[in-house]
Image (tube, protein in one colour):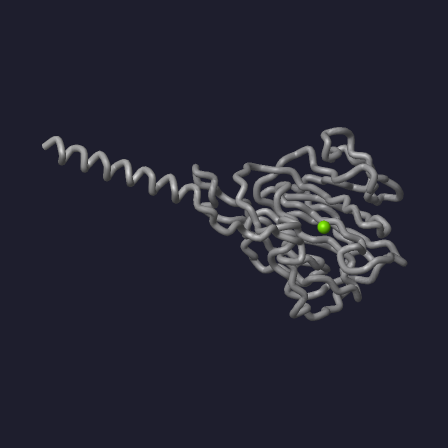
Length: 258
Ligand code: MG
């Protein structure tokens, strides 16, 4: 009996040793991600020339986020007063001040904004009028001058950044105003922090559908894969990108919570 007990003890000890050995085993680690690993350049979406669109005023039930007068609906990303330049009914990115965010937080919404790349802008690929609108401060719809300027397609104008290219290149030339109408459905999370329903977005640029009820995979990372980060309502963020090209401008921004 004693011998049997000792044998069982020895077996348990051997098991423990083997588990420890497994823990110490060196497995290959994932390669460090580089930006180019999540960028692809083909096929380039077709170029579609937008029709004429009149400047639209805000609907009666919209929350006006920028009517050309001031940035009272916005803060700097550090929480201070928003300090981009406001002049002639237009706000222009001040790259020394960083991103700005709406003071109010939103769930699902319809968002309208107009943006303009300055005439004579220089630079290429991502370094040409780069900005972006972040939905709930999490998911970037890219803003970039892609008028005759190619870049990786999942990072071009109207892409869900590093995820889904736009269905068309609907750019107006630098110096002309582009219109985004964005219909966004906020995600629902499980208690464990994973998605029960991912976010969805439809984007219309200058009257042309460029994202059609697109499922957003997770956060829009510059390096690496989309991440799942549980969140609630969030602000709209406008990006002050660090590229050296001339800063872009915005006007006529309003939102209707859905
Ligand atoms: Mg951007």
